[in-house]
Length: 251
Image (cartoon, rainbow, N blue to C red; front, side, top):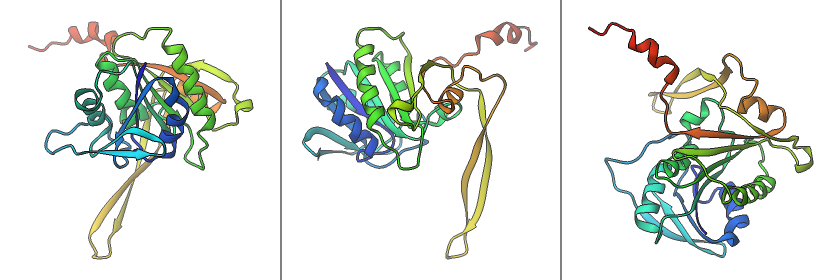
C-alpha cells in the first residue's frame, strides 16, 4: 500500500511527525507537506508563482519533501511529479486544532484531503481539537486503526472522511460518533493596530456561533468527548433549493 501524508501546519509540525511514526510501517509511505505553515488557506493553489521542492531527511525517514506552496499545491505536485505512482490513500494531518463546522471551509488540512478525493483517491483529514499542549499519541494510534478499516471499505467518489479527536486521555474518550458538519458562522473581531512606523495594520480573529439544530454535529460530538467522523463531499449544490430557484423570474 502506498500512502501519502501531508498537512497544512508545515512539514516539521509535531502532529505530522507523530502520524508518520505510527503509519510508516504500513506500506510505502511518502511525506510531502508545505515547507511552512499554511493554515486557513482553504483550497487555494498557486497560479502566479513557482513551486519549489526540497528533499529532506526527517529522523530515519527519507521519502520526505518540503514544498513552497499550499496544501493543494502539495497534493497536485506529489501526484504529478514526486510519487512514482498514485497513492492508495492520502492522510492529511494531524492538525493542531479542530476542523469542524465552518472551519472545514477554511481548512488547508481538509482541502488537501479534498483534493485527493476529487482525484479519486481515498482520503482522510485528521485533527486534534486543541491548541494547548497537544498530545498526538492517541490520535495517531486511532488514525492507524482507521486506515485499516478504510482499506477494507470504499468511499464514494468525491467524498473524504473528516476526523476530529477531542483532547482527552484514551480512557476518557466516550466513543465514536458519525456526525454532520455543524451549521455555524464566525463573528468577526478585527483589531486595528499600528506598526513601529505608525502605519495601520489589521489582525483578524473571531469566534464561532452555532446556527439551528446541531444535535448530530461534529462540534457537539467533540464537546461531549466523542471522536467525530464526518463524510465530506465535493459537491456544494443546495439540491433542496433548486425547485424554488427554478420558479424565479429571470426574464
